[in-house]
Image (cartoon, rainbow, N blue to C red; front, side):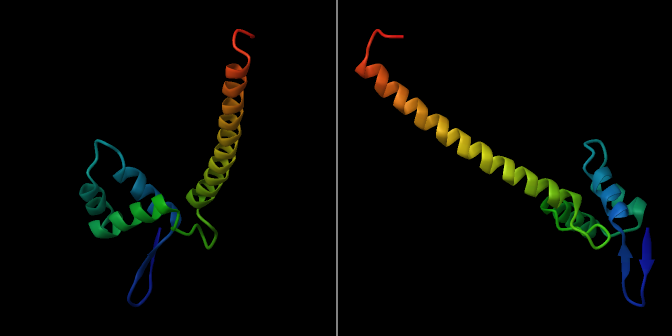
Length: 104
């Protein structure tokens, strides 16, 4: 849905999300989406980038994309810490294997 002020047209999150989703479809050109929605193609490109970066506000709240990104970052940090621990354990096991060959 769009609303107009004296100089600008404002589009809500759902409108932008729908436009970006359509533009990301492999069989649909972004220019066609922009023309169909009566928006400038550069605006659609900007929305795609902002959606990817989690910068489009959802009714004044953080975007869903941004929340998902933050959750993913937390999970990545957790997995990196676990990977570091497992690598250190692997180093210790390799050293023990050299000290005690033939024992398994």
